[in-house]
Every structure is written in structure tokens, then in C-alpha cells.
Length: 448
Image: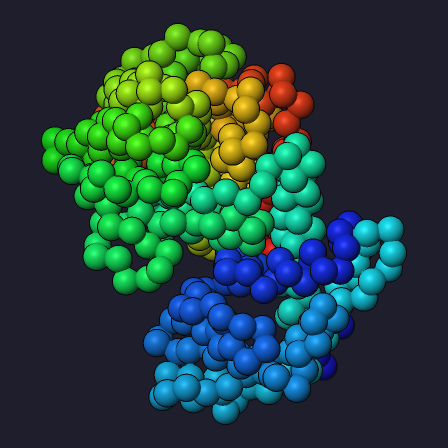
């Protein structure tokens, strides 16, 4: 019983250990397919406490053990209890996790996880495979950025609690950057500042080097007049006012979320790059206005990058979160004809695009954040079913999306046909972590 898992990281021991000490490490290591959510990260690997929330109100409490703390060689955590919600797991499960780090020389470190528990190793191996891969990839990304001269920055992020924002904030924090979360509620933590999208405080961006703007109403949903207005109003005005503030207050970089909806909902087999003309439809209109709203920052001397994002792959949110249970039950299949192009990107590769925008001063204007290999919908469903070891025999007729999203929503979201390539990233020799869909899904779903 229990588990011993190890791998070698191409970084010196102090760098690997320090990564674990920073805010965001627990978030970056948490497998996205598991039902637990992070309630709190430990503020110290010596004697801090981390907490996970599970369905049914259950809590997993991980207490770090002072007698096992030996930086940069070891830290230890064990399951504990703190309140009634943590008692069932705390009393039923034995768990002691020793994190060892061995210096191998040549700036290489062996990371060893030893878990003492009655839980069988086969039930844990996919989780630790994921953790070690994330650790290696994240550290490699930070080392590449540092080699270009990127020093620790102060980065303000809107939408930091969303699917992308939470992972990006954690990634940047573990890289040694200071992340300020711009929140709409009253700030309750030192890392937060209250942001009023309608009238931002003139001092909101004091001391900030770069702004990453992710906030906006989700486009998912039935395209009613009210939903369309929310999509538009949450993007155009707030983005313009934020860009105006940047122009007045000094940050020299704005990285703003955008979308491949710019290219319209049906471009057939046309290959679309950043130089392609905008397309037709409501979302194309929204994205065009959204991108133009960043103009005051550019006119004020800031470098502006507009990240036109494809369909983000993560079981923690977006389309994959909706499709996974259907496909796992053997009820998945192509949408409509299945011939429409599906331009996707894995969540970690998207994080790397935002990261590159921070350190690559040659990058500006629109950037397509999509994997280099778009697929037709029928091929996407085939790969997802294969990864989950299920058939994909039940096609979804066009009527299904229309019932859920309305005529316009089905046309512009579920049945959109966009063959988009990351031309500017490819011209910059950008390295994708997992450019292949099957690789991406296996990693994100813990399928090895």
C-alpha cells in the first residue's frame, strides 16, 4: 500500500524547493479531474495548513509537520482535522506524505514523493504523474523566461477567480512574480485591490508593471437579449476605462483576453491567421469592439497584446467539463455533421501564451491562442472517446444545441466552424507543451 514516485527536474534543488514554498503551488499541482477544490493553501511548509473541499461538505486538512521540515531537502504533511467537516476523512484515512529533494548536480534535482497510506498505489499514480509533469513544465517555462531577461514583476489581473485567471495567477506566483488580484468586492486580502469597472480608482494600478485583463461575462448560455447585453456590457466599457487608466498611470503592458469569435461563426475550410479579415455574427462584432477598446492604452505608449483564445480544454471548466461526463457514460458523439473545424488549446498552453506576452517584447496586437493542429468536430469527439475508452456513436443533432443555446447561440458557439492557426506564435518559434489533442486530454484527465 502507499506510493513511491520520483522524477528528475532540470533545475537546481533550491529552485525546485522554492517553487513549492510560493503561493499557487498547491493550485498548480491539483489534478483538474478530481472533485476536490482548494479552500486554503498552506502559508508555510514548516507548520502551515492546507485544506481541500469535497462534495457533501467534506474537508481534507493537510497539516505540515515541523519535525519533517529540512529545506531544501524535505517537507512533510499529514492528514489532520479541524472542525466537523474534516472528521470523516481525518478519522477514516491514514496519510503521511514526505516530499524529498535530492541534488544530482548539473542543475538537476530528483523529486521523490513517499506516501504512507492504505490507499493502493494504482489509485494514486495518475495524480502524481500529473503533479510531476506540471512541476517540470512550469519550472521549464519560468527558466526559459528568465533566460530572456524577465525579472520578477508586479502583475495586476482582472478575472483572477475564473478558470484561466486562477491558474494564471498561481503560475505567475510560483514563478516569483507579485500578483495583484483586481476584484469587484471589497478587498479582504493583501493581494487584492477593489476594482470598479465603471469608475476605477485613479490609484488602482500604482506600482503595477503589467495588467492582464480577463474579466467578462461568460458567453456560454442562451443568446437572449439580456445575455447578449451582458456579454457586450461586461467587456467594452470596462476594457476601455481600464485602458484609459493604464494610459494615465504608467503600466507599459496590457494583455487583454479576446476570442477567435473575431473570425465569424462559419469560415468553411479557410485557414485563419491574425491577418485574416473579421467575420460575421454577434460574437465577431463583440470581439471587434472589445479589441478596439484597448486603443487608449496603446495610444498612451503601452504595448498591447490581444489574446484571441480558442476552445480551452480543462475538465475544471468550459466545454470539456460539460462533455466529459457524457462521453464517460458512452453517450458522446459529434455535433451536427461533425465537419466543422474545432480550434482548441489546453489550459496550460494558454497560460504559457499569456506568460510569453509578458516577456516577449516583440509580441503585440492580436495573437491566436490555439493549438497548431485544429481538428474537425468528428475527430475531436473520436479522440476524447478514445482517451476515455468509450464509444462515440451517438451524434447530437443540430436541434439539441438550438434547444439549449437558441438559434444564434447554437450557430455561433456549438456549431461554429473556424480553422484557426497560431501564426504569430509559430513565427516566434513558440514551444507548445502539448500540441497534440490526445496528449493534452490524457494529461488533463489523468489517463497517462
